[in-house]
Length: 383
Image (cartoon, rainbow, N blue to C red; front, side):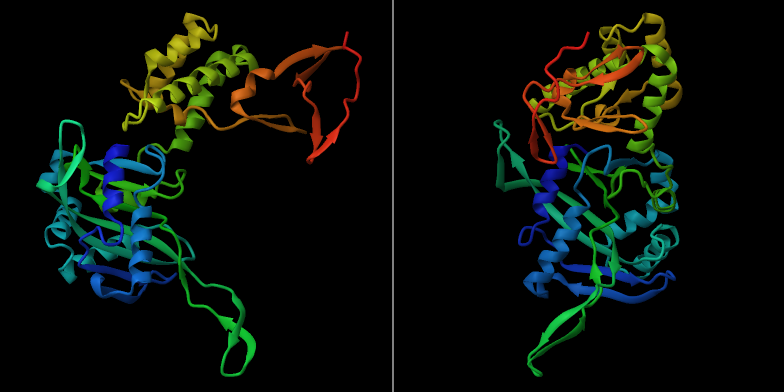
């Protein structure tokens, strides 16, 4: 799914826009025991509760593609014969109405979800979306639809005890310690099945959500989708950084890193201006071109590309967001950490003065210490 597809379904999930008939779920304690089942007629719930449920469900379609939101693909054999896919398909075709199917699904989730020492809530909703047609100007016509997208959403939320606080007791006319009920937190993980692509159902894919990009819940993915977890964005970034350091060695210095970051960030900014809903990807050829522009030799550039193939696949394409942090440029020594706006990273340079290595930052426009302006410490130029 791309950003445009996801946003279209997110808009449909709002109160008064969706077609939820019932909301199902179960409350699980830290011993992984079901202590309560949920089955509510959605249209009969108070407005506050419908808003809260919609907020939780919409959260499972939020975040960054390739980080929080990952496409899960099913092999043709799994679609034809897989027990995991059959359960998902049956849940969808029955609109979650069969208790036996829900119970089977709950048990699979409970066995595989990794939320240690935490109570959690499993939520399920089934929905149908009459996909409005688009005219030649890409404008939607809500009165004209010939496609119905039938899907279900699952989200898994931690449930935590709130703190004891002072509360006013009207009957006593005083304040006493009050214990608030357990509070449902934002989803840790969830998914949409099937995926919504090109404004129709793609039964060969699901969209998986994780709140923490570094935590892909591998047991859950294997148990529910019968698939191996993709490489997390954090792992991708670490591997790519190691490839650059090991392959380029002394050539991977501050000046080279500055140039590399600037070129990748510039491509990201230019791509964002195109409003293309698909995430930007760089081929290994494009990565090689950037390195060449940084002054890296053909031999070392080829070595980087080869190691990328070994780690990411023969036809690898890389998400720039998993290569650099476009919003931060941080330099660190054992004693000092310097955080710079990436837009101004070019101002930083290294120099050897009297045999010692220094990081230099111009301060012509003044210096502040914790918000307090300081005078320049010296007007004498270094020799």
